[in-house]
Length: 117
Image 1 (cartoon, one colour):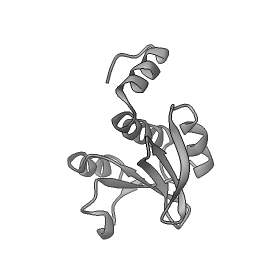
Image 2 (cartoon, rainbow, N blue to C red):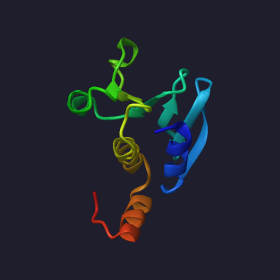
Image 3 (cartoon, rainbow, N blue to C red):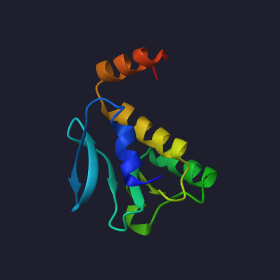
Image 4 (cartoon, helix red, strand yellow):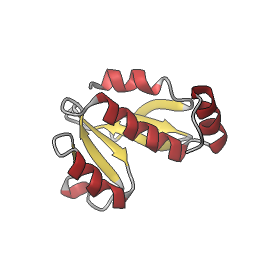
């Protein structure tokens, strides 16, 4: 998956804004960090629950990792060229649903015919 494919995907999620963070392209929802492309242009930083992160990395060791710099932060690093597009979409969608308003998430889920998360 590429950054342009990530950007195309987030167009399907309401309320996401594109901007920059630390001089690199980033995504926000309700002015809150959602994801950012790291300086190498191939790695995406996405928020996840710290307790869940190790399980995610164990399940997807070729695509997900964390560096010493990020160990204390609730983020996972995604190697976009190695990650399955469905995994990237799921990580972003989960982070978005935690940060977007409940009303927006509920409306989006209803449009898709899905139950509340």
